[in-house]
Length: 51
Image 1 (cartoon, rainbow, N blue to C red):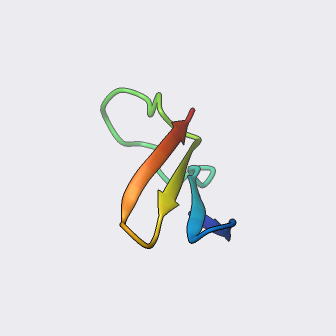
Image 2: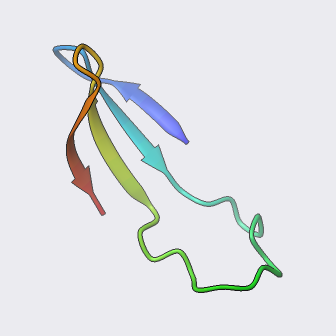
């Protein structure tokens, strides 16, 4: 997880897997990663999602 401050109380939060962190686990692959959220930290709402 990485967080980068933006303007007007917005923080961009990105999630990306570590290589090998989930190796050997059963289940479908993580289709929505990497993903970036723009979060308004004044109101605590997600403003946008970029896949």
